Picture 1: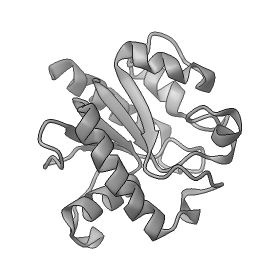
Picture 2: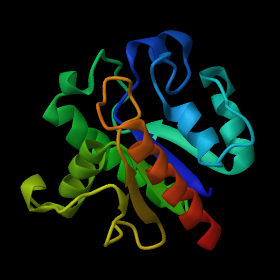
Picture 3: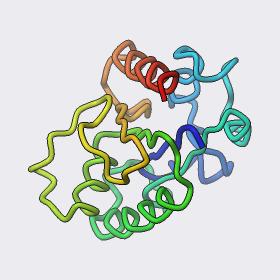
Picture 4: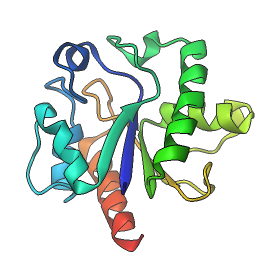
Length: 166
């Protein structure tokens, strides 16, 4: 696997239709296409086609919710342990966390350090949690996120450029 995308959890719409990043306001599919990671703009129902490109998609928590704020700390910590095992077994070249908070809880849980002690930013992370997997963070593509689209797109372009080097 080239890239494993890791989100918070399924939104209500994604849970209803059984496909990742399914809400009409979610920018994930547009970002992948405009960054050059997919040959055309996939729809959520095309998520299975990511496998053909060497990409996968998962969440740190499986329970759907309207917003990520509804996820409990206990759910996130438990999900981090499961995610660690998944990444260790699937061995993606890059784990791309679609949300700074996703990576913060994952890294702090696995490394057993306070989340406030982590210097996390979008882009390539300084250290790897799993030796053979590069950690990369983009902001959450949810329509609820107020990060400007151009900033999000630049992050996905940086991801594509990184992929071409590994």
